[in-house]
Amino acid sequence: MSAIFNFQSLLTVILLLICTCAYIRALAPSILDKNKSGILGIFWKCARIGERKSPYVAICCVVMAFSILFAE
Image 1 (cartoon, rainbow, N blue to C red):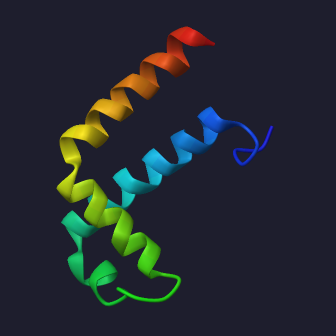
Image 2: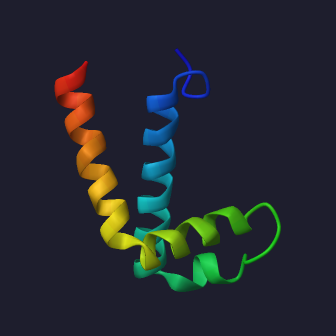
């Protein structure tokens, strides 16, 4: 089933996107900082969410991991 039609898979993809963008911005900030607007600005916004809300994102990742491992 596609991640678009399964809500749990959609949340997993969004969490992975946020974590990946924050990690890339920590390693090479110039990649995401030059694209603050437009369609590529989504990645910059995800990186900002990952940086500013990192405790909440980490908790969501742990909860999602437990739900994937033990709930299914």
